[in-house]
Structure formats: C-alpha cells, structure tokens
Length: 397
Image 1 (cartoon, rainbow, N blue to C red):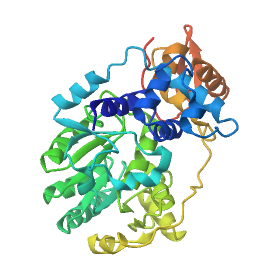
Image 2 (image 1 turned 90 degrees about the horizontal axis):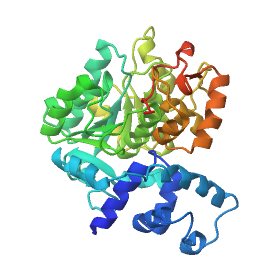
Image 3 (image 1 turned 45 degrees about the vertical axis):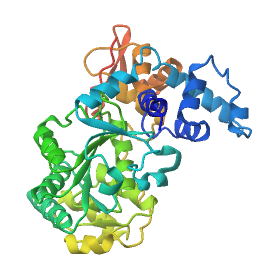
C-alpha cells in the first residue's frame, strides 16, 4: 500500500468531522487520493460527475459544493506528516480500510464509516475485535453498577472476549478495569485524539489498558478536541465494532442509550442489566427491557449467549424537551464550537466547527433566538443561562 493513500486518508480525517457521510461517499467513489486531489484543485477543476461514472442525483452537486467549502477551510497550513510523526512518537499507528487489520464491523456504517483510525496499542484491531462485547453505561453510576460492570468485563475476558467501551468515568472505566485485571484485551474508543487523555483522571487506566495488550482508538487525529458531537459519533464506532452491546446502568437520558439504539439499528444484539426499581441510574436499562429493545442479562454467561443472538429493534428515546432539541447538524456543530469565556469571531468558529462562515452565521441566528448564544465584543459566546451542559472547545480569535 502506498504512503500517498495512507496520508490521504489521514488528511481526510483532519478535514472532515467524524461520521461525514458526504465525504465517505466521495472517498468511496473516487478513492482517497483522487478525492483529495479534486478538493485541492480550483473549485471543481475535475469533472466530478464524469469521474464518478454516473450523474449526481438532483441537489447532490449543491450539497457537495457546500461540504467542499467546509473541508477546504481546513486545508490551509495542514501538515498531516506532523500528525503521523506525533502518532509514531506515541508508539501508535494508523489503520486504514485497506489494511488486513481493519475491523469488518465498520462496513455496516456505510458512508458514515471512519476514513481511518488513529491507534495506540494493539496493532491488529481486526483480530482484537473478532470476538468482542461492548460494556457501556452512565458516567454517574452507582457502586452496584461499577461492581457489575467490572465483574462482567472480567468474566468476558476470561471467556476470550475483547471488552469494548468509551474510556469515560463510571461504567466505561469499570469495564476497562475489569478486563485489564484479568489480563484481557480491552479497546477504548475516544472522542478526541489518542494523545489527549480525556478524561484526564483516566490517564493511568489508559496506560494500563495499552500495556495489557489493549488499544486506544480515535477517529479524530492527534490533538482532536472531544466535543459533544464527537462523543455521539464515537458511540456509533462502539456499536459497530462490538458483536453485542450491554448497558449496565443508564439514566433516562444517557449517551449509553444512544449507543444501544445504534447497535440495534445495525442489527447487533443488545442486553441490559436490571437494577433496583427505585434507582434513577437504572431507569434507562428498565426502559430498554420494558419495551423489548434489549434482553435481560445478569452475568458474563448470559452475555456470551447474547453475543450470538439476533439484533433487536431500534430505540427512539422519549425525553423531556430541551433547548438543544431539534437543532440540525450545522446548529449543533456551531454550538459545540462556541467558547464559554472569550468571544470568538465567525471565521474562527467556522474553522473549529468545520463549517462555512455562512453556515455558522445562520446557525448563530437560531442559537441566539433559543438563548444558547450571545454576542460579545464583536464575537460570539455560549449563553450558559440555559444550562446546556457545559462548554464546547474554545475557538481561537
């Protein structure tokens, strides 16, 4: 495989946001090197419909043009060799779909599949994930949940499974610890770059995970910031990578339910661990069970049975409306890019969000009307008065 192909895929991961289906379709149609050449040329110097071998669907050319403008903003000053050298210094490696080590499960994501993966630790991801189970749950878990997650992960490790999770506090961390305690392989999918220990309190866990033969995996290149939208996109990787997904604890509104819903849509079996009926930390698990979207599992033996079972139906969460509900992709990415303390101008926000300045301006209008953004000193800030759950990455001026 040529270095040009690897560098092109690494470049695409820097240019686009995770889960960008338009970029995925373009790269699949033209190839990563050719698609990058088209983007770098002067605004469509390459005859794209002719290169694709078929005419574009109505409206597709306009959508592709908007996306190309988003991606082009990140081309200036981009040095992917610096990212690859940084990864090498960390003892990591880049895995691309053309490698034998590429996990087959990502094929079910279609155009939303990752364009490449930045990995620290175990090199052969395909073998590591050949028999794998995702053990996930809430960050704000109980002692009961931590105990069950660690015991279940350890039991799965003893049975030869790789334990997959998201590296977060709570259930994720307990699952990773339970696996490493038995010397089993465990893989953590991160929302930011593999060089950023996020959350910082899990840095020792990540080191132990890699030393035990596991891996830290990210779709974003080194230095990538773990924004809210990237956490949601990270969840789809967990769901696709594992043969089954088990939710140990999850509140009524939990990111773990998003992962479970994605797993179900990909026809992966989903399990849920029951908890006390009085525990808010188990409300999401009980709902999965009540609606028949997951089967009840209480230990590693039952999860072992689940891993060979058929998938369940998709979950459509019913939640209390929030100020952020109903935002489209552009508006959410604009919100994620808004700083909390120091105002940023539209051009900087566009670069951070991977959008065009015009898209950011339109998104800011909606966010301002909803009380989620406000003008300040010629720039824009996140308006914390609506309690949207913390700030996003800080865009430079």
